[in-house]
Length: 63
Image 1 (cartoon, rainbow, N blue to C red):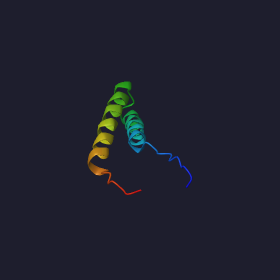
Image 2: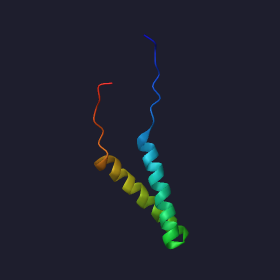
Image 3: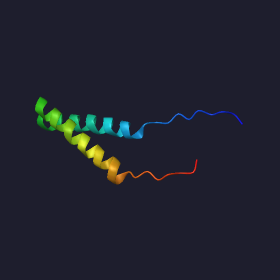
Image 4: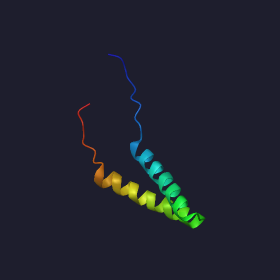
């Protein structure tokens, strides 16, 4: 059999990045201040962490 290298995508990192970016953009549009952007980054990060740990459980698979 051939040796195959699996390209695994770091889904947790992508979810954290997208959560932070969208949180910052949402807070910036809502508040229009730099402090709002920082708050949005923190809020998006917290929401993404909760999403990863509680709503996105990973089941082990056999392959």
